[in-house]
Image (cartoon, rainbow, N blue to C red; front, side, top):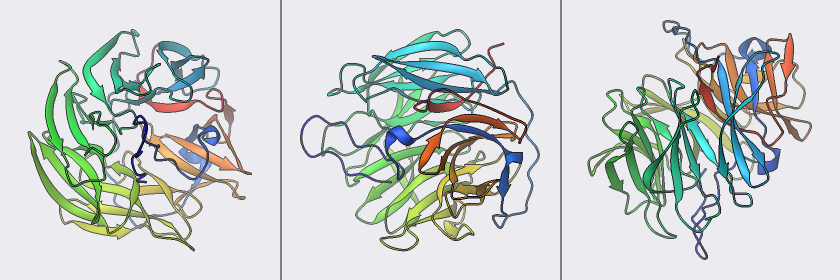
Length: 359
């Protein structure tokens, strides 16, 4: 969801929040068997992924003055381990994303410098080793990985009212490999890379609405129009061929609608279902995008007035990370099937991604 940049004071953009306060956002790990999944209109089944050693969740646990990067195996009785710590200033906590292979976590943090650019730190969860990438970056920038984890797309720091700048970082050497400045854009959001890994894919919001662009070496190509209005919750399929997102339809009635763009044809299809849809994920081994929210294909098994907002499937396709909202509250749990549950952390724990097991 696009939120205009601040027009005065130091530049800390307002986050693209869902529809609840930050304190109410919880992270939940839910096994697919515990959900009632309605068909999304696609029945094509892709080859099942190879099960790897990526069965652990990484998340931030907030403590006074610092955010702790925690790793915990997604099974009962697992003990969370602290991997790294990042200073925080008031509510400006660290943000992060795990690489597709689960061997690196990229972290954006401002520490006690909220008026300045955010620092980008690459963390090895196994050893706890950290490496700071030179340069300044946008605190609320999306973090978009290439499939091989060698490149990271994000936004360079820009002051209030300045155009967004998309940056490609070489995660091995730490250098900036490519840059593009969208002079006419209100906002830009890196969402992934082309299948060959050579170009960053970014959603651009401007006076014409939302569109998808590819960027490399100072060159940008408009690929498709997503909507004449605002969009959010962009999620690229693992093969880079489709982009799932949520369109903000307007005021009154149904306001948020799940859609899927096919990059090869530029066609946009509406996801089945009634009611608002939030969040989009691609389950490994299938070709269907899934959406949460009251009208999404992913629903809580026990029904009721609750709903979930999916975040990410595990690489083996058996476990889903999602924020669950029920009875006006959010809760943080780890659930596998209907047999057991465990708290992931505190109610303010912030999900980062799936990482390799530490043991």
